[in-house]
Length: 113
Image 1 (cartoon, rainbow, N blue to C red):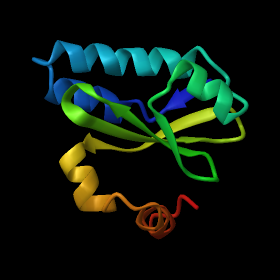
Image 2: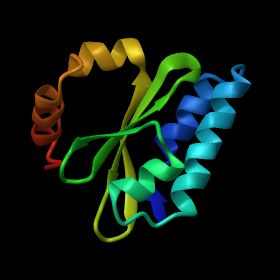
Image 3: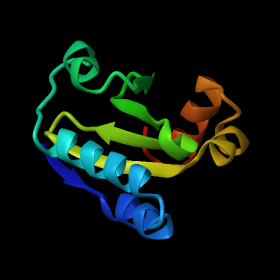
Image 4: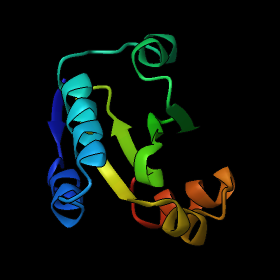
């Protein structure tokens, strides 16, 4: 799978370069996405059980438990994955209020859906 938008993850790594566990987890996420071409959620969850589908148009949050980091990725039907949002859990709660309806509105307001 082609993974565009990795720069957000690389920026997150740079910001947390002292946290080697987080950096390794981000590297593993990048590797998992680039080396797989999932066709359904079951296949995705077999490799990444931390994935949570938040919208039917292919948007998933990945919960990197180390440092409580959440990453929102869009998987397009064209085989391209893109990072839409990445930050810590506190910012996730502030932005999305732990609510899928708020996530959908956020995605719509930014032209993702």
